[in-house]
Length: 216
Image (cartoon, rainbow, N blue to C red):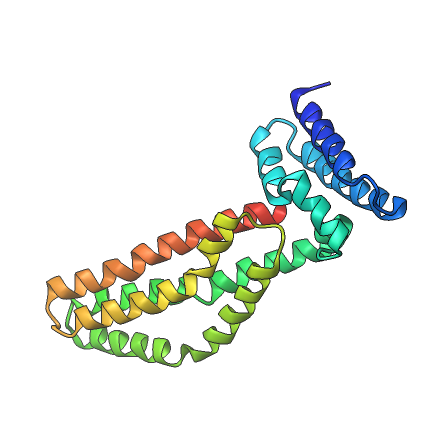
């Protein structure tokens, strides 16, 4: 038995003891669902111990899983980790990225183009601002993604928090970059371009982490 399989058996054994006295059918359902999820993780990532660590971290300590099972406060693991859970987690990551990253990049490029100061650049500059101003439809997309991220059991707490702040960070960066650009000097426009691009990098990292956990 490998170390990873030993960890799985140890976790399940402790959970089995925590579920003592529970209805046998519910107990078997919980244990079977957890085993199925952990076995699938080992099968998909046989050479990556971090995958098992992440899976156990998302499940939480055995006592928490047992408490959920006793209170009925959480759905059976087979539903928590099934295709539906993967789909919701994926929607959360995609909606977060679509509603934030493209507009951050566009805003950054808009300020950089504005530095050139010729007629074409000015038109692109104003056109970019118009696109940003009309992007109110991105807000409901982000809100839908936020709901999916918050309720999904597939994310660690850290990743859930990173994804949740993508929207507010995007809004804050737009305020900050707009305020900087009011001076309309090259140095201020460069500074205004750096802020949304830096936030876009952070959003990309958060979405990448979220996608990895959604698919694991």
